[in-house]
Image: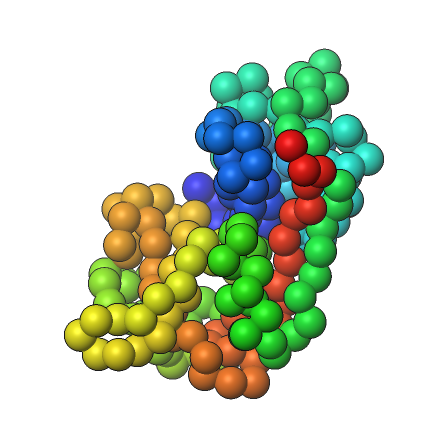
Length: 200
């Protein structure tokens, strides 16, 4: 996975899971459709989940990963496939910065997208609750899917899905320290979004 298309993976992960919560069906959706067709974003050269949600609304929805599979490079938009609207959203919502309690409330109902600084040693993370060091240079998008408290240490954490593959971290996830105040660990509380979907 090209790390610079992380915005597309977060956009899709939050919508896939919300759709599953609403319908009971887990339908893998297409990151490649966003990489190729979302003219507001830079394909594999950085993007924004805010703009991606807006593009999906304008497009009328997203198609499936099976219909429009991931290639890890930006290609020409397949407009015929992009016109297949498997899942639709109403847009994206934003949680005000520096508000981890409101983030926790949101995550209890659906996954949320956040931006972080990739902290020192994060690429070598294996297990446990990560607590830095890191700053707030937001350059990587990830998905918060839950939260908890580490039984051994009592450390509060966010359960975060990364896009670096299942061999990284805890089967593709990292537990990041929660409720540290201010911008949050690695800036996790500074740029927080979630998709909005009509009730089933």
